[in-house]
Image (cartoon, rainbow, N blue to C red):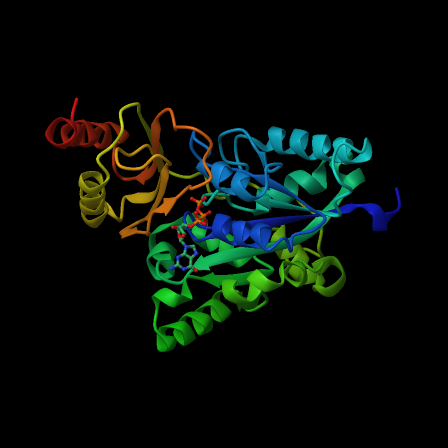
Length: 340
Ligand SMILES: Nc1nc2c(ncn2[C@@H]2O[C@H](COP(=O)(O)OP(=O)(O)OP(=O)(O)O)[C@@H](O)[C@H]2O)c(=O)[nH]1
């Protein structure tokens, strides 16, 4: 196959809750993600992002549960080859690029390593651009305590600041300066700008980026004459637990929202991320909720949801808080505030 025909595989990275799905959904809704195939990788057993993206793009491929940078790299290869084959057989439109949304805990370097060391994949795909989203509100705290955050930021070809509406202009300037020091090679922009033009964001660094930049992506040492070395996995999500709660009865939304706000208020440092799709008593369609550390984002009503949601599902990604303790706290809440 001619080099030009190989498909660029781009990676959209960013810590938990930084806004990756929101950005993808924005692009899909504006229909400006033409000729792009999308792979979504979520951490935790319940694919909530998938529901959100499916609203605007029913063909989105959800990778199996688990993080693409560690346990499911085999599935990434299978999914990529499957995409390519379906494209060749005319079962999918002839997309020209692939964007992989990684989990918020993924270290992106091993993903590229998988790609570049696999003969079958090499035949069809080339390395694209690594874009990392940075949550303006939580960046400082995440940098201090989450090792994956730094891995994602320092590996990026492009850094996109999200949620800049949640900090003031002088904080925005300080954040941009600081990110420039952390990764001087990355181009810096923000999600508001990127929303209107995804294609220029993913322009190929193979042609425009420096050699040094590309090899940094791999985690390879810039001083060893650019010799390719397989990367070791630098981050393995230490002591992270996922807690999934499934509930068949409808929830009393106002009471549950207060309980959840209090939980995040008290345990925001240990609840890295919370997502939920809820069946609530006073609405016929489900509500999607998002929490990122101490912040509970405004709920979203899925107005186009077909039929009734069978059960509510809540996914918590915890670091430093036992899943059992959270389950117990939720059971106490149910006993106190919900009808049996
Ligand atoms: N205020 C504000 N909220 C945002 C922005 N971008 C995303 N959010 C909110 O942040 C929450 C998390 O966004 P997601 O898009 O789900 O984040 P994600 O990176 O896909 O999360 P993970 O899949 O868990 O890693 C949602 O409630 C979004 O509505 C932004 O620019 N401003």
